[in-house]
Image (cartoon, rainbow, N blue to C red):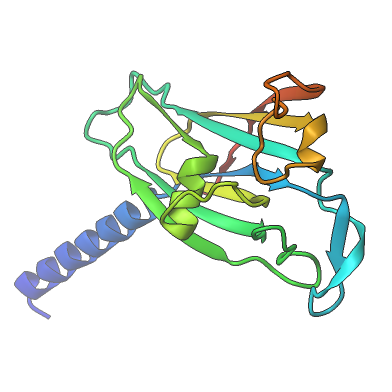
Length: 206
């Protein structure tokens, strides 16, 4: 083998390895963020092999649920030439009230979208409406009970925070489609609200 061919082989190998490293460097961290979205108008669950029978418990109790997922890029001293992007996918476990991911079923990733880039010192968020857009292309009202994971694949480590809100109103049993805590006379009915904030830990893949 000539020296020229040998050098060419080394260059090709180097470029191939560099390309492989660049490809693998795209996704270095993974975050699986739980979301609970939408309105559950009943405490009667769904069961059976065909998910066609009513009874037992619902996945979550009667109420209206919202999730706010916040992403902050704290890497203010990172190499500005390093790609800093976020890929989003969804694992859907409850689809419009139906527990499609209940064992022995397995949820498969649904491709969401790519946010490229998320610059250092910047933040963004996803909420139930954005998840609906990724799943169905539009936001339904009332929003059906939808539960799963927003899976973030990132090239950089992020601060990820999830905010969960749940609400019930006494008169929803009489008007489950309206989702209004006021009765027909405009009087506020008995209502309850809960909120929880969780910091989500990511996993380094390499």
